[in-house]
Image 1 (cartoon, rainbow, N blue to C red):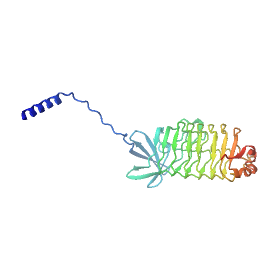
Image 2 (image 1 turned 135 degrees about the vertical axis):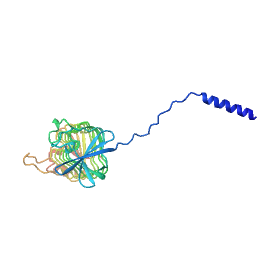
Image 3 (image 1 turned 30 degrees about the vertical axis):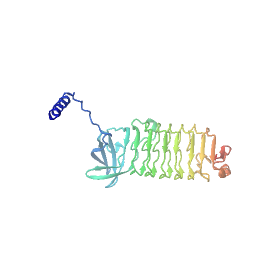
Image 4 (image 1 turned 180 degrees about the vertical axis):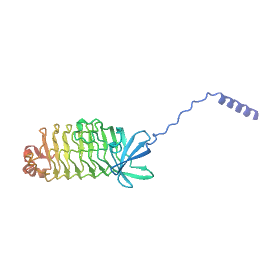
Length: 312
């Protein structure tokens, strides 16, 4: 019996030794390694310290230091100022703003997106003539950010996706002006005002969701948003600026939820005593108990014929 077992063991070992060697399968992680900041350098101009951060994927981002512990994103011109050769930097593809970073042994929390950070045509109001607008398609904003500065994303013509966290309380003048590929936007309930020209010339913008925290929609906020077909004004709004929907030639339906008709400042220079809506507007829906109020209000009276009760 022992001889039989010994012989069987020898045969098994011989068979195993004769098996062809299996190729090694490379082991890959389930998720790619996170992109991190690998180096920083600084430039000082007019007593403002600007940091250039180099990421592990060879991209860069620029920050103005606001205090010993806070910073905001900024345009590359803040680092390569006039005293140094300008080195143009373009943001491309998917961009993620870090919540914090370390520079010279100190930790900095990113609390804001500064003026012009990603916007093209620094120093030019006419967004149609810029040649250095960012070509990023999406941007991830951390919950540490509390504001978006003026023209922060102006002329980011390939930006199609952005999620604004509810930590943001302020969105600046012309912040998304000329973002011609942006198709939808949802404003968090931490924001109370849509500032002047915020979404002017966002030609693909077809869906806008505003929260009940919004009390003011300022002048030209959605001018030339030619893809807008309907728009809902939240019940919290009490002021609607001039020419908010100027050039919105596809706008057919306006849902105005405030019980009290929103008012506006009358412009003597424009001889304007009422709202100016595009000729394409066919229906203004208001709450049933407010129909007469809207029809007789001095600002809304010119559109009395198309003001009707909202369907239940």
